[in-house]
Image 1 (cartoon, rainbow, N blue to C red):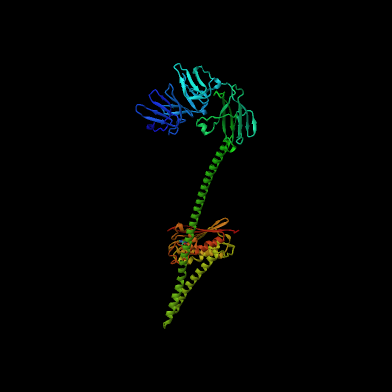
Image 2: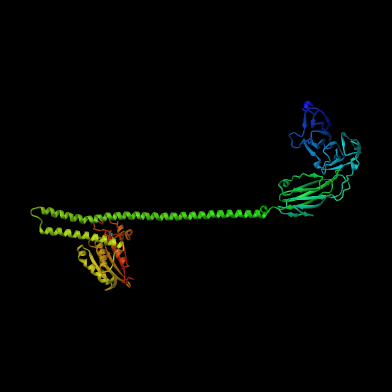
Amino acid sequence: MKEYKINDTYVSAINEDKDGYMYIGFFLEGGVLRLNPKTKEFENYKTTSSKSNNISSNSIKAINEDKEGNMWIGTRYGLNKFNPNTKEFTNYTTKDGLPNNTVYGILFDKQSNPWVSTNLGISKLDIKSNKFQSLGITDGLQSNEFNGNAYFQNKEGEFFFVGINGLNAFYPEDIKQSSFNTKVEFDEFNVDGKIYKIINGKKFKSNENNISMNFFLPSYKNTGKIRYYYKLENTESEWYLNLKDAEWNSSENNSVVYSNLEPGNYEFNVVARNNNGSFSIQNNVKFTIEKPFWKSNTALLLYAVIIIIAIYYYINRMKRLDKLVYKRTSQLRNEMEKNNKLLNKVIQLEKNKNNYFVNLSHELRTPLNVINGTRQLITELNKKEEGISKSKINHYMNVIDKNSKRLLNLINNIIDSTKLQSDQYIVNLENHDIVYIVEETALGLRDYIENKGIELIVDPEIEEKIIQCDNYEIERCIVNLIGNAIKFTPSGGKIEVIIKDLDDKVMISIKDSGIGIEEKFHKSIFDRFNQVIDANAEVKGGSGLGLTITKQIIQLHKGSIYVESEVGKGSNFIIILQEKIK
Ligand code: ADP
């Protein structure tokens, strides 16, 4: 045996299969050796070998081959079937219904069912139903205890099993299993302190999960010990769904207690076996332990709904926030654009103001330069012996007078426009004939106009129209407009002054055939800081204040002024005044 690395030298069983393999069983702890006597190849099967389905014990009592070629091995702990093709063992112990785990002998009946002698009688394994049927002393056996290596089957198929009180010889087909047709009955159930007679089909709350059950055999002819085999299966558990068979528990007690059962559908099965190994009729009971509300399907549905609502709300909120952010961003962008425009306008205004003041300074300096130059001339001439002639003095005084007036006029205009701008200017509104005022003012300038080679036409459509106005201020406006017309109309041109009645209003038009004004300046010429049209305004003696003052005066009369003009064709300044100012 050392050759085969087996220390156990006590061979207890030996058999040869139909293929010529030798099966050698060892008594102590050597397991089974499967040997090919020709090749000397061998395998040793023990409980510890790395295979998944091992032999149930290393102490061998019997080895026998069935008609199918399976080797049946009796051990000190259970019966084993060895399939030489798969080299796998199937174990049978008391858990599977074997009356006792010490198996002394193995014989086969005509149906190839193994019959085994044990320490608790003889037992037959019905290979079809995979259930054991047992014979005990009450069935006529010499004793329940049998001996090792003491079994034999003669050619007629008769079985011989030897035990401590002698020999049993029988034909297996003569043995009629004395099954006891009694059914295990349930006595009562205790569910968390509450007693029930029947619980089949009952549903218990999740906290009613401590159950004890009492069962009994109503009549039993054999008075020996009864063993109950039972199992409780949760048909909802993952374990059950994986289609594993629950193990049967066994006890001599006729009651069982289950504590803290998980929620689920339960099936409890119970069967009794008498000491012959005969089984009673099985009984079962089914009951349910419900899930707690928070685990129930309704609760799960509720959670799902809440989660969906929360997600929906969240997405919606994000969308709303997005929209809000988008709205705010575009608002901000608009505001920024507005501010930018405003800023550009202010910058432009500042530039214009600057321009205006530069122009104005030139305007103020020109007459002052002339006055100063004339003074120097007079002083120089006066240094000479002959002095200055009377006519020259008169000429120079005239020049000084003209320029002083121009300067004064300019300063008055500046003061007036500032006053007008700050609403400090007062107009004296009284009833006046507007036709008379306009006509007289225009005719007063006739000589001057005609001297410039320009024709003046004054053409009122009405003879008289009394309106509320300040005659002095209106005259000033007319002078301003005719003055501009003269300035911008070359000789040979024409100036027309027209007055029209518009019922409760009156229209005054001063039209010239001069150089005209580009359309883009039609509005800005009425704003002193926007007087940027004519770079040569200074040459022509303009301060950019005339139209500004005129417009402001007309506005104080609640009237309006605008221009219609085309470059090269001339301009038409139109004033509309109210008959009565409310
Ligand atoms: P200024 O004292 O410089 O003439 P105004 O306010 O009277 O200032 O006129 C503003 C500008 O409008 C002028 O500088 C000129 O360019 C233009 N303007 C005014 N009247 C006429 C007109 N009749 N024909 C052409 N341009 C005119």
